[in-house]
Image 1 (cartoon, protein in one colour):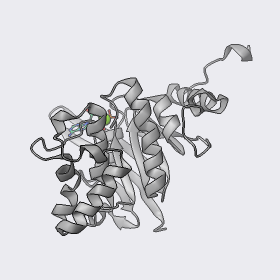
Image 2 (image 1 turned 30 degrees about the vertical axis):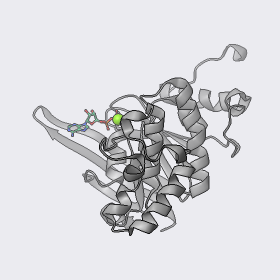
Image 3 (image 1 turned 90 degrees about the horizontal axis):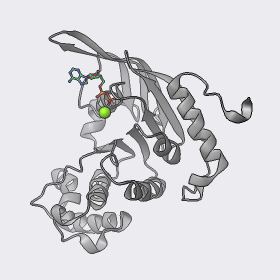
Length: 263
Ligand SMILES: Nc1ncnc2c1ncn2[C@@H]1O[C@H](COP(=O)(O)OP(=O)(O)O)[C@@H](O)[C@H]1O
Ligand SMILES: [Mg+2]
């Protein structure tokens, strides 16, 4: 079905090392629908980044097949079907905010006028209109991440791949950007595959939370959050939010945690 943003089937990844083979991923089955927000969560070393890198065609899978909008991952990369953002914003320090956001368009050969218009639109989308002439070192960490998100969206990808993009930010900024990201994802209609090791972050952002376990990395649970579309601060204090946080925590621990009110 070509409507799927991501379709991983029987995906495995083995890294050969000096001390033998590391089985990073095994038997990964994952379908992400167009426009869907899916988080990958699991302990450090469970293969979250590896899976994202396979989807992004930054590394080849050892086994299985991977399709992005019904295309091989490599084709999707060439077609700029997805944008990527990492924990480090990875901005070019000698380029202004505008020139950083417009970089993918430049590489794609988009003309200057179209680029300027698109950069203005993206700056507006991420709330940086007043900062497009600044340089990265004149921005806070949160603003730098917003630039990285705008850059990832420049070529209008239908899929956004994010690896702990808010991992280095303080809690307040992080919660603010989580709300912003859900708004941006809704406005652009892009599907998102989001790697995190934060349970509240995964629940707040996602339609589904994919739980992974280490050695060898595999998917052990998928939790549908079923939360309302409006992802605001009120949601963080709602019973259904707490309920999903508990469900993900229990899935991560692989066993039900006994709750006081159940005794
Ligand atoms: N290039 C590599 N060479 C050898 N082992 C690797 C490489 N990349 C990742 N690994 C191993 O694969 C496993 C999964 O890593 P990773 O995907 O980075 O985990 P996570 O992002 O969930 O913390 C780990 O055991 C890690 O050491
Ligand atoms: Mg990682």
